[in-house]
Length: 316
Image 1 (cartoon, one colour):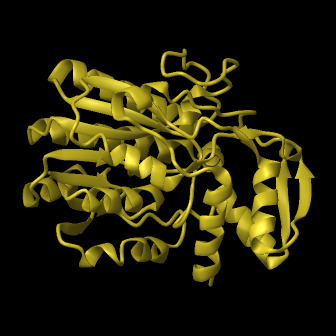
Image 2: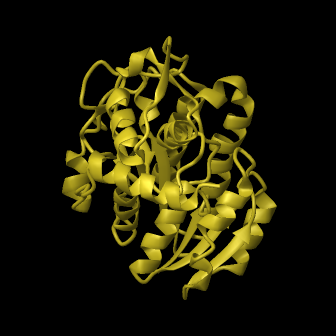
């Protein structure tokens, strides 16, 4: 199958491209090398993929309808995995309009192009942040999601609704995956595990919100990529599916694991909870198990070990 992956040079996207290629699919990777962090990192993410059979790359922006239309015209595409997005909960509070433009309008462009080119299969990368301050745990896809507390979360929920509308009105086969706190090799430098590791390694203070008691359903990136890639040959109509580890861990525990693997002690600076943060994320993955045979195989101890090994090899 020929699969277009938007945001394919990013953290999750590059792993999804790799997983799809390993399954024998052809991949049309699209990325605009957004400067949220150094674009050279993204170039390195897909450096090795360029040598694999069936991989092609197009530099394009999902907000540019005509530019994306050219990519569709030049490529053979059976299904789209749409992961391109403006990422980061905290950054969205300072710049909500850009998040709306990329995450909602960009997704609308992709859905319209799928309709125009008669591509029926669409996979959307959503986020556990849509659950907001959900008092019921674990978070289930059937839970009400009306309490998002950041512009980023709101744009992800709005994009899910767009997907549902296009599925109902135009017959697109769509699955929206809600990713839970993804970490691992090639992670974004602004994400918690990467940032903590870098600060501890350099001997710099680590800013810890709320004394590190918040719990996150940290999920190793390969488990996420395998879940997404495993959905490609399936038909869903319209579904929303959680992809997580179903094992919330405190931020303090993650810092301890990083310390152990680096062999260095963190200098922790405790500060009040940050605007836009939630106290816990916790995925109910029973639906993913039933529909996909999804089974996350990398626990937090092993996952942090793998990440720190990658970090040490690639730092600088």
